Length: 97
Image (tube, rainbow, N blue to C red):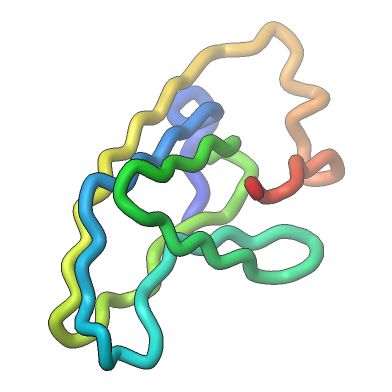
């Protein structure tokens, strides 16, 4: 799990290009976010994407299982807001749905 530095990943987009796994696999890896309610697992299928604030939302990826392949493309869009005051840990955005 990590958060991006301010100015690098305030707006992040993760797009799933491929996600293959064995049918008999009991669990597959997911993109994971942490919010006030705990962990949110996003099992992205090919063509699915998620957009979130990477500088304030802890995010990461679970380890791949045996025979699993995932291709993700991530884009980070940074900007320097004039007023960083609203971007504090006291005002965390919700994890993406």
